[in-house]
Amino acid sequence: MTIEVFLDDTPGETRGIVARNGRFERLIIQREDDPPQDRLGARSVGRVVDVEAAFDAAFVDMGSPGRPAFLPHGQRPRLREGEFIEVEVTAEPRERKGPTVRRIGLADGPPRLLSPGPDVAAALARVAPGVPVQTGPAAIQASWDAEEEAMGQGDVFADLALDFAVQRTRAMIAVDIDYAHLPGQDPKRGRQRANVEGLKHAARLIRLKSWGGLVAVDLVGTRLNAEAIAAAARVAFDEPEAVFGPLNRFGVLQLSLPWRATPIEERLHGRDGGRALTTTAIDTVRRLRMRVLQDTATPRFTARCHPDEAAIAAPLAARLGPRAAVVADPGVRVGFADIEEA
Picture 1 (tube, rainbow, N blue to C red):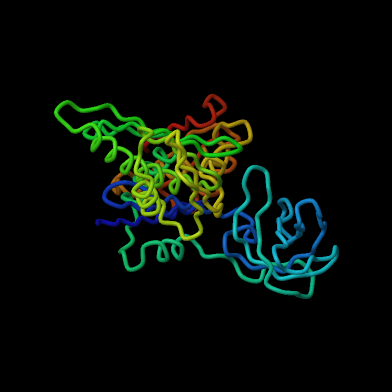
Picture 2 (picture 1 turned 120 degrees about the vertical axis):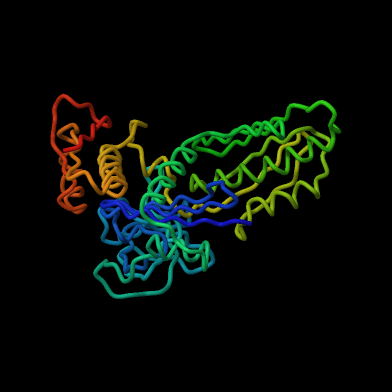
């Protein structure tokens, strides 16, 4: 197995990418303006601001600008409004919800950050320990390629006659595995191989997207070996906290995956579904950085972009040094910055 690890440290945003056997499976994104209290693994002192009996949970103010954190009571005694407690983030914000936290113990106020969660470099070391980290142009290109795949909905493997799609609604993730029989091959073995490979690549894409929740996998065929499918699914998803349901008579396998990170599409997109202004501004800075690193002879690169985008990008680009600059141009649409050589 070949594992590659990349670290793209562009001003404003750091990305970590992991590829196995040439296929991307992890894309970790942290932005400098992310509230540190919301990062996975961060520990904070928070104040209980609400107790919801219907959810058997409490909401905790951790001093961050976002929504209060959600704290399930579980088997522990219920909290009271106004109590101060120490908590750790187990799932980052998503779907306009605050982070999910676990209780560590009682604490003294006021709400404050005690320790941030692991940064991207530390997260990469945990996922792929001992693997050399590539930086510079190679990491920037990997960042773009991994993002493109993370925003996709599936793939086609012509050599396997395999076509799979992965889509998410608010309620669940749906995986559809399709197989077109190849002439000269045993149909039963072909379906088995398509299901195993489809599970593997669907699991990889779900990890890349940072998704969790209920997953329904529509497999090829209905008369399937349930034990073999369950074993393949456990290997593919490789998640100790996953819960696997039985394979039903329609050939659908259900499982549940824990939520941990903010989904990639929510990182990059605004509430309208389009790319957020901050995303397009950092994109421009990343493009500038790539040009500066690849072309050391050109004295200066200037990005002309929409004034709203320039207001965010200019101070970030200034950190690239005197060879990079951003100019506001009302004639340029948001997301269509033009980079000029000087």
